[in-house]
Length: 214
Image (cartoon, rainbow, N blue to C red; front, side, top):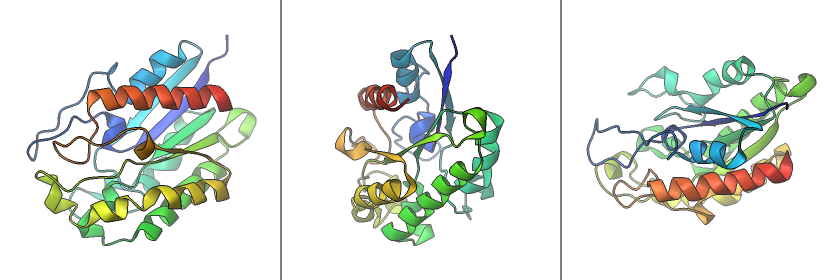
């Protein structure tokens, strides 16, 4: 049996970061609790699920506080090509672009995501040198609460505008689209990360989509 490979490229919510109550309190859900783990369990042995989630990862921005390595574009091509052949890439980024320090608009974030999709399509890392199939997920809207509220000040309103823009970007790129905010919601603890039950719902929904398209 030939396995299909799906690469999940994202930020802390792909990493499986637990909702945080204070700075530095970075916990991680167990592998089987993360949406990527639920995805793997649901798809079964015919799929290989690769987790590539980095907390604080942006779309295309070097982070002046947390480091240049948080730039999602700078690592993307090497990441995808290192795992080739890749049948599907699931991309969920943009939440960290909402941080006040970046001063970008929802339109800017959507454009940046389009740059990432183009980078994946151009690398020829799919089967037989083709492009992988693409799934663009709009992140769930954030809520400005807890200690992260100040870091993301003004970001909640912007986050509610992303899904519609991402859907258009996905259409333009020939990618499949999934709106995480229509399926799950962020934790009221920190307003950014997903609780375990939301990971489970999201993983099952992504699995259903992959079974349809691959």
